[in-house]
Amino acid sequence: MKKITIDDLKQTSKLWCEKQEKKFSEDNLYHISPHIILDNMFYNKMSGLLELLKDGGYYYRKIYDDIKENGWNKKYPARIGIGDKGEIYTHGGNHRMNILTKLNLDYVVFQFVYQKNIETHVPVFLETGKNFYPNGLLPKWDRV
Image 1: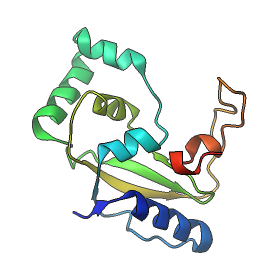
Image 2: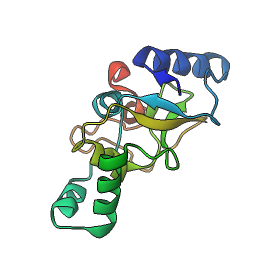
Image 3: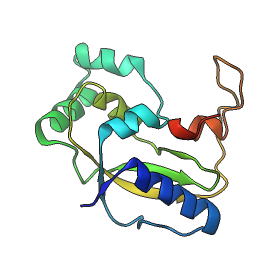
């Protein structure tokens, strides 16, 4: 599997925004460093999930133990969304992203998801009142 870098993500986004062309197939699986995801992309932080791991929440504990022991399962790839206005973000799987904060994996298996005209149900950043869309879905390096 090809390992995707931040530069790959930037080029993928630019090509999709400017020409609606897909640099990488949505059908293939890729590797990416979990640090690129956690440090640069939007995902919904779920503080309660980490508490469930401590308290023995069976469903999440089972996922955590599986990822810790076997790495990211390619049967359940993460998805990275590429939007037509520069958005690069995790596309679902927030519980697994939060589990990543407690693990030291070398890579995450993922697929690209290309989207047009993304809409979100979260109208503003709660802390600042700034418009969420598209700023909330932009990668860290492009946030306004």
